[in-house]
Amino acid sequence: MTWNLENKTALVTGGTKGIGKAIVKEFLELGANVIAVARGQESIDAMKAEIVSDKLTVISADLSTKEGIKKIVDSLTALDILVNNVGMNIRKKIVDFEDEDFDKIVNTNLFSMYELTRKCFPLLKESKGNVVSIASVTGMTHVKSGVIYGMTKAAMIQFTRNIAVEWAEYGIRLNAVSPWYIHTPLTAGVLANPDFYAEVVSRTPLRRVGLPEEVAAAVAFFAMNNASFITGQNLAVDGGFTINGF
Ligand SMILES: NC(=O)c1ccc[n+]([C@@H]2O[C@H](COP(=O)([O-])OP(=O)(O)OC[C@H]3O[C@@H](n4cnc5c(N)ncnc54)[C@H](OP(=O)(O)O)[C@@H]3O)[C@@H](O)[C@H]2O)c1
Image 1 (cartoon, protein in one colour):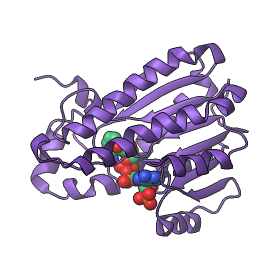
Image 2 (cartoon, rainbow, N blue to C red; image 1 turned 30 degrees about the vertical axis):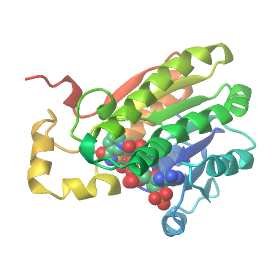
Image 3 (cartoon, helix red, strand yellow; image 1 turned 90 degrees about the horizontal axis):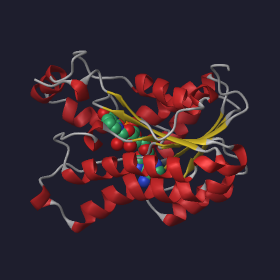
């Protein structure tokens, strides 16, 4: 067994910023061909300027829609690794949510994973590939991030368990990685509040916020052949947050 992703083709959703971008960089370093997907042309152009590699393709699509997912699936000719990383949040109390908030969060975080993963089945079956999905500690315990986000992340973890069993006969593995607070554009707003930041750090045994590269390392491990007997698992990358009792 070797610690690399040579000759593998990987699709990383939400690959132009934060955790997704770190996964793209890690996969390229490990030798994979990577297709990154995001909506914004500006971040796509910035990514292409920053990472110059003939192993990187960046495509624009909105993965919260069936059309966006079809566009990406139709463009694929081979796939060994699917990373479901796209995600967003709207933080409100349950009684304050609008119907549009529910649809937006569920379609971006959960529907995208469900629809893209099942549409990639023929290619994953062909390659005996694997899927790594970025869930969250909010799917494992209560976090003050709003109930809809937590619900979608818990569902991602359960999706991973169900389909790991359903697709085991094809040699396809599925695993999830659940981060606690990580420095990315998604969390920059809330972490800019010094009181909130101090509260996050005080609840984290390792006494800091995580880095995107620390999530990418766990994703790369699950994606490699070295993890060939690991499926249906959810790994918290959380500085000890989820095992921190009183
Ligand atoms: N950061 C954390 O502390 C943390 C903790 C736990 C879990 N997570 C999870 O980790 C994942 C990545 O988070 P992040 O913090 O790296 O987020 P981020 O900084 O906001 O980056 C999100 C990426 O997804 C793309 N994206 C968003 N919506 C999309 C859509 N509908 N279709 C296609 N691309 C889309 C964005 O590009 P465009 O906007 O240009 O489309 C961007 O490349 C998410 O699932 C998040 O829930 C993050």
